[in-house]
Image (cartoon, rainbow, N blue to C red; front, side):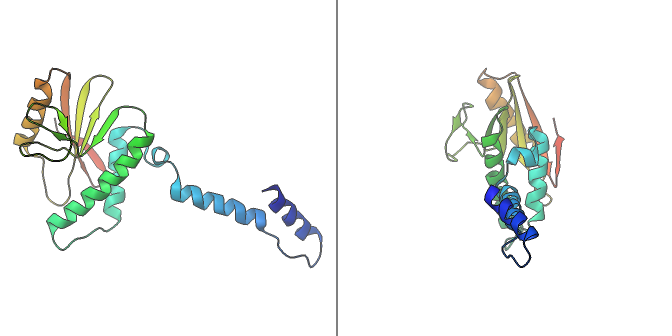
Length: 177
């Protein structure tokens, strides 16, 4: 962009010269490009609970709506998963899984097989604690039976030291248990 800056200086010095403002335009292009494709970690932070809260707020601010509450919730969950996946690719802290099914033996499995449970976000920390984050839209609440099932399956594997549950809703992450 030295050539752009040189053109700007020449246009400022020489009366009647055209083509000035190239350096300013190049800088604006760079800023706009970064704003559109910038770091998700820079935007949302590196702390999982904080990032998920911010992502949920962004999803809510998009005004996503379907023909009924269930469809709206599904659309919001899809956008949430998309943004969380992009964020987690950059964030090198804990192991993050989005919409990862857990079978009856506590194994992570692909798809959504019969009898499996599928949390929205699973974080396996360096402390060997599994944090389950559940995005809630509308009036939905976290279900104790579901949380008990997830916890039992993971703890029965003997791989983890504990399971914690968090509700993510409208820009806020709250520990449930």
